[in-house]
Length: 418
Image (cartoon, rainbow, N blue to C red; front, side, top):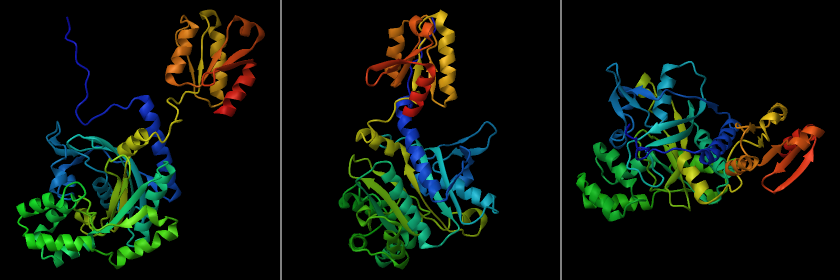
């Protein structure tokens, strides 16, 4: 007897069944509409990149989580850890792209992270970035898109925390943190929203930072103020229609990736406690690693997986359809199959998603239970009486009502409800 294979998924990886995909699809449709309203165009990159493209740009903490391996041709390759580095490679590879270059990108990325709530090993990243502009307006516009995107998704209680790497690096210098340790110290400071000050202090001690330096740094972070550039960004936000309760300067925000050079921002929701749902910032020197000439860049990433988790947990979309199918055309008997096929074609010609039950021998109640289980709102029935009079019975499965009408009336009524 053939051994039965246990069906299972790898830790940190998930299947998305149709009901979950309905939410994910709607999220992406809403965000895409917001992105395009601001002039951003879509782009995609390959899953695999050469390792020298991926390494040396995101920091050692990120690189520990990258999926790196040799392909069958013996090449050193890796799976995308995030989308920004691949896009930087594109900017270097296609220098004729018009600047500023504004793109959005929605693709999966892979991280060998420790799986936990809101943290997975395969995630869908949804990025928007502007390349080639040093203006504070470019940063402010990204923040405006974060606000408008989350509001369009139905989020009511969230705050966009804003800081600047320039501010943080100035504080490090004031606290006498050696330049060669500043990046690692920033990575520790970034954990202050997850760990206590004592835990972060112990981590900094292990990196050779003295108690005096740490105390001075902690005090500086608590009293930090925006620099001139960041203040221009903040002053622009009200002019873009963002109410002040939805953003604030936060000196503790660091962002883990090492390539940020200016304003940084991330968004957290009050409930559930799931971490940030967006994160990004300005990174003016990343593309220079490929072409030897810096190109200004700023952008953010929407965490689609966490956003969908929030929508599901808070039941923000109770009425989202479970299926794209609007109508199930039943088959009363094999003899009446042609009638069912005819009405199916007519409804589809009206651009309504329509499914015909595939087993003409199945009992009618089984077919209706199938439609109920899938969440299909309408069923069309053509029995002997309807066929003789050239009528159909249109059954509203949500309201448990039905009416017997002509095929043309049924098509029109379904289209009006669609």
